[in-house]
Length: 249
Ligand SMILES: Nc1nc2c(c(=O)[nH]1)N[C@H]1C(S)=C(S)[C@@H](COP(=O)(O)O)O[C@H]1N2
Ligand SMILES: [Mo]
Image 1 (cartoon, rainbow, N blue to C red):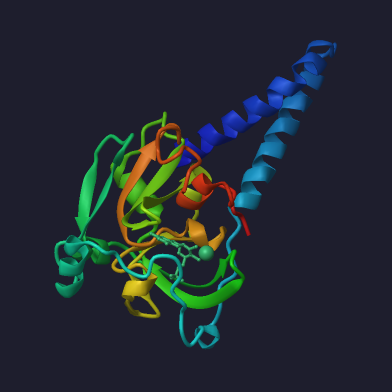
Image 2 (image 1 turned 90 degrees about the vertical axis):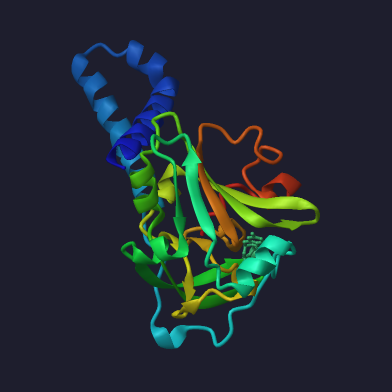
C-alpha cells in the first residue's frame, strides 16, 4: 500500500514538474531547484490528503428506516436465482488482474476477515439520499493480499447484473481503492444485504456518488488502463456519457 501511495505521489510530482521545467532550467541556484521540488511535494501531498479525508459517519439513530433500491433491483439469471435461494453458499468473489497472487473468496472467507462497520450517507445523482450502516472487509486488505503489481493504476468492479443489455461495472483509482472507508460490504444495518441493495456483496466508495458503489459484486480486477473495458470510460453510467468517472462528494 505504501508503495502505491508513493507511486501516485511521484506521478503527481512528475506531472507538476513537467510544466515547471522551463522555469527551473532558468533558475540559477541549486537552492531554488530544491525549493521548487519541495513545493511540488507539498502540493502533491495536499492533493492526496484531500482525497484521503473520511466521509462523515453517523449515529445508529440517524439510519434511514428504509434504504431505497435503485438501478438494478435483482439479477435476472438462473445462476443468481439459485444462489439467492441458497443463501449465497457458493458465491465467490474473485480478486485478480494485475496482481501477483490472484485468489477468490467465499462469503464465509469474507466474513472471517477483519471487518469495518460505518454509518454513512449514500447520495444518488437522481436526487435522493439514505443513511445506512455497512459492514465488510476493507478493499485494501484484499488488494494487499493479492499484491497489486506496480503497473496497475485502477481497480475495476465487475457485477452480476445487466442494465439496458449491458454489464454493470465500475472503477476507481488507487487513492479511492485504498481509502479506509472503501469496503466490500455484505451487511446493511447488521443484516445480509437485501436483494434490491446488491446481495450478497456490494462496494462502498464513501467519498463518491451512488453510481460508483457497484452492487452484485463478482470480481475485483487491477488494471493499467480502462481502455477496452466497457466503452473505456470507467463505468456503466460513464459509458453513457451522462456521469463523470470521478464523482467525488
Ligand atoms: N451492479 C449495479 N450496481 C449499482 C447500480 C446498478 O444498477 N447495478 N446502480 C447504482 C446507483 S445509480 C445507485 S444510486 C446505487 C443504488 O444502491 P441501492 O440500490 O442500494 O440504493 O447503486 C449503484 N450500483
Ligand atoms: Mo444513483
